[in-house]
Length: 369
Image (cartoon, rainbow, N blue to C red; front, side, top):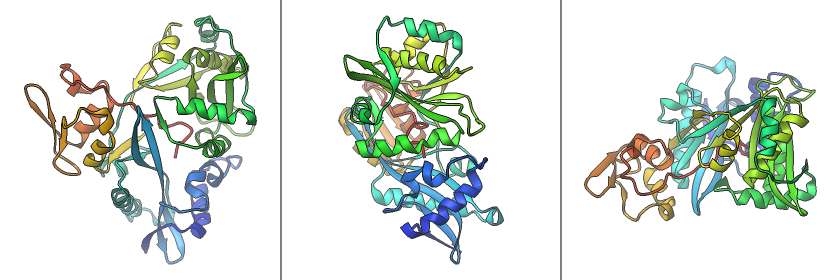
């Protein structure tokens, strides 16, 4: 048994293993189709465990850049983690995870986002992070949401010619995964998160005077797969008032019995519009868990958003010293992640922290891994 980084020509074996483990219905698209960032030919960062020439365990590992208020985070995402049932109980996934952590450290990454929270990850130091709101909208909400803004927009299905305008709206979001128009084109076609929950992806756009002002990517029940979850907003961008109308239109146009709308905490304007209809949110954490690769790297990458010298790292995993007017606060990894990314952090309770919490994208979106 040996562990190695995947080669391009070995990825078909990873697709086969992932399909065997994750696909619950024959109608579900292949994992190779849904997750091109993991399985498409190119320089792979993913790892596999091998019994001679047979792949028996796999961990998808994909590099991303997150832009947040002008700062750039170098991060990885972990997903499509699977082990052949005949080889379970040998700690193969744990060994793959260790290799990914070392890989991330050598790459200068600050964070690893993991699409899961099982003990495999939490034992290794991954943690819940950030804050989000989750609304559950019934058909009764559609008309109040449509009229709450008084805004007139033309709503239609996205056409291929809309790609550049949609990409521009994505680039305007406060916290986002960096992507080119070409990468966005592939992600829209892949429908990763929608396929995982066995729904059909729809993209609606709002148009005003010939220009797109908002978009909404929504996973809805289709005719091919049996859904594993209710209809869900996957991604949105642009003018919040126009986006609210897109959400209302989706409820009506697709005859949705319920639409789940998860929003990261920074999407305050859209959240306020939804709440104005009388719907209250459930307060949740961001999706999955996060592993802090290096606190010192994270602080370096977030330097444009932090007061100079306020937080010092004594090592890659701290301890960290937060200097306030009258005291020095000592933090571990969990405390650092909390104070940076969680607006409800207990360390912010006394109001002495003078920098704003830093937004992150909601991770169960278009770039879901």
